[in-house]
Image 1 (cartoon, helix red, strand yellow):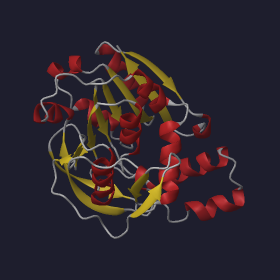
Image 2 (cartoon, helix red, strand yellow):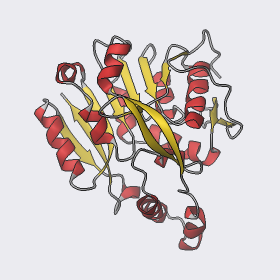
Image 3 (cartoon, rainbow, N blue to C red):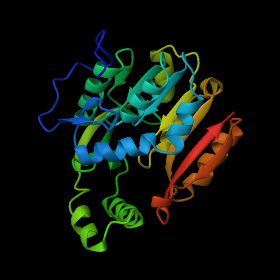
Image 4 (cartoon, rainbow, N blue to C red):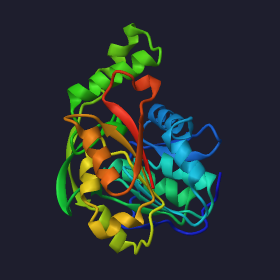
Length: 272
């Protein structure tokens, strides 16, 4: 386990951590704080598998800046930081419980990283956020219990889980709690943290990805070298986001993991 060398910088007051968090040892032997060990295992597999985040990590170099929007408990940020030393990482997460885990994990393992407690949208202010205590990674500004249940059923079925167990797993998984959370924009983060470049903008915000991109002012688009995002293709969103990125000079590729075939979830990778 990596020992902390200095306190993690944070843009929110230090929290002591809610009582519904717990320790968990990742497959690499490092201990983290999480909400659910089962979910942490899935998040780690997603971060380290042969997918979008692994590919993005392979392209990073020491000194690069990563903006992790929708960081959850910080597993993707941790993976980036462990694979590539001396990254500048800013990790943003709105929900108090997952933010407490994020802050603790960065403090323990990536003490130079910055934790920000906020949602990222097209404007600064406040918004209603739906938090799923049993499925924190599906929480969001546009949470949809019926759609989230359906996507989870398909994912479990594609993963080989017997049908008899799927109903029990999904039952009450997406029972949400309404929270009011602060919002800011990518451009707010650029100014606040005096960013001169963003080597990687990672977006995983459960149907709010279009708002994240809408909050980038024209002057700040040239700072961004690469965007990786999970996109919910609802109401033509994937086509619209692809077109927006192409207009800003990116070459965009889209893929869907086999476990997500039949869902509206796609991986988008935009590079200059």
